[in-house]
Length: 208
Length: 105
Image (cartoon, rainbow over all chains, first blue to last red; front, side):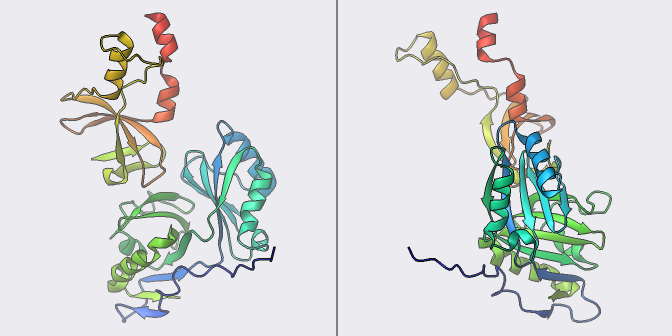
């Protein structure tokens, strides 16, 4: 059978994101957004009663301890984000060694290390990912996100699965700048982008 | 109405889906076709009959736009006051089994 050469994943936001400044033009941009491309993603769901063994195997193989509360733990470009009881999303940054063999590299590595402990499903092409920052990013997100992002309630490393502008999102705080990473189902990338562009316009949106 | 998910914390009820009465228990017998038989009545009760109390009630909800866990919410249907929110799996494992209940009665 002939080898099938798969092209690299297409950007979820390429047709939508116009680089440069949008909305208010004066002063520094209130919100800065850039698409995170080349991520490898995989859901990890613990088999019945194996969550503790899964955590130990994940620590031994990847040096990352999966959190049992809505948190993101990471080491050397590989993160594990809690996404439900006994469920996590593994995220390998672009250029991580596990993404070398294509997007499936992460899922394959997880399947190997967690055999019998977890069900692993590749999600690399299933999500669009954005990194959001800027001094007014909380004000822009507050227009669609019913989640308290005040520093006393949501800190770097905290993660949440919730609704933003009636679209399911998974997000986590990267640093205290503040910077947030946010994932949407790929099919909602367009709806989400239009909401973001409109919501951030009054603060000045810079698309990188 | 705001529901405090035991996994995610307090969220608006728009993130949750109502999934029915949490007080019903599936009978563990095979049932019977003859109306009047205790097995028939038990299944009739389980499949069709629901209480509608104007007050405290136990309900199944799912945090469908969050962690997707099934929950048991104990609340007052008249006032929307919520008394407790439990993980449905934990609540199911904690309750006495039907076998144990039948043996005790």
